[in-house]
Length: 400
Image (cartoon, rainbow, N blue to C red; front, side):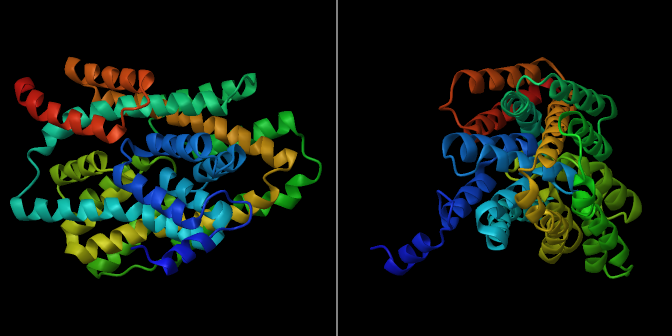
């Protein structure tokens, strides 16, 4: 028998203008965090498909604002977009509960894997699983990038030019450059909606995330305690790394392997593999690393420290996007940034593909995954990932 009190609560946590309850949004992101494979590109694509196209909970404009803000502010892309979408209709409470719902499933998984890793001396089977899953993920990511591109770029030649430049730069440099995003927004703004006093009005709001980042970095003192070192290091990782979740990997390697010596190179590679084969945001690998360094306490501190900056750097400028996002100048700026962000995401498919597609079987897996998603809407990504993992366990030993 259902609890009438709970039903009453669920029905009342609904705000004006929203076609869904906060409870429904929490359940959605809890599910996405549990079964959402493919990294930031795929996750942002799922959010668009489910919340904009299928359910109509989030408008196209709000989604584009969130994607632009997520690219402008430092931190993991998918988590920031989730936080912003939670904020759209339910403000601070929505952003907070969505953030928790999105992150907690994958955190539990990486902690469990960390326990198994420590207890049983490594994840030797993971190479076989990641061999196939990594290739299949490329197919998922490529399809998500295609859908995102066709929906956000349109037929505007300047947006396509920005898209191509951003994609090319991402492929060549293998990084996502925040100055490129800002420059693209300013260029499209100047061409499509030349400013008439708008700059003075919005300058502070645009720069707000970056000024906060600098203040955060200056406010973190040095300390020799292990947990405090974990907190300070991962806070900086979350506050100063721009772009997709995988952009944090070089920063983590320099700190955890080179600077602190917490992990050796093989342990770090295993940590990245864990991030790729578990659902949810890729940067949850920080929880796995934290567990290897200091057990459950280390995992909790590392995950909290990584996601806290991205949470703050999303909700602080969010009111600006809600208030001024419909003005012609701001709308043009957001469109330019979105085009650059979409180009960078598409370029990241090539960058990741070069690392994951290493022979004929992995190339076939990526192409088959892409073909299945292209032709059928009934096959879910978790099923594809599961089948790929089984194939990896069979095929990988043959390729050695």
